Length: 197
Image (tube, rainbow, N blue to C red):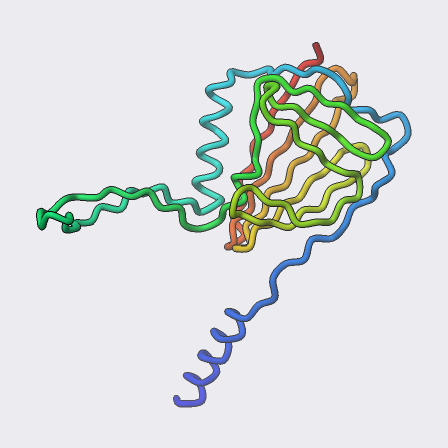
C-alpha cells in the first residue's frame, strides 16, 4: 500500500515538472507565386465573429473574467464593497487581433497586417522571438507551411494561439484559421473568410 502511494506521488511530482513546450521554427522562404497582399473584407457579420472569438477565448484560453467581491475598510473606518476584475489562466488572447477589414502587405521578408487600420502587426518570415503586449510576454514563431503563412504564439502558462492565413483556390478569398489550445490540450477553432476588395 505504501509503495503505491509513493508511486502516485512521484508521478504527480514529475507531471508538475514537465518541460515547457518549445516552438519549432518555420521556413522563411515564401512559396513561389503565393502573395497574400491585398485589401480583404470579412464575409460574415463582424459582431457575430467577435462573439465567436470571445467565446473561444473563454473556453480554450481558461480566462476567468469573474468579478471578485470583497469587503474593505475605508480610511474613515466605514466598510465598503470592492469589485475587482481578475484574469487567470492563459493570456495569449492579448496577441489575437480582430478586424472586419484587413490590409495585407507582403514583402520579401515579412507580412504586415493592418486590422481595421487600427493595429498593424508585423510577422517576419522565419521569426523565432519573444513578443510583448504590456506586461504579457510570449514566444512566437512564424513562417510558411506549404502555401499558408502560420503564426504560433505560446504564453508562459502554456496556452497557444495558432493563426493560419491562406488563399482559397480561386485566390479571391483569404481564409484565416484561428486555433486556441488550452494547457489541458483542449482546442477551440474559429475559421474566418475574407473577400478581396
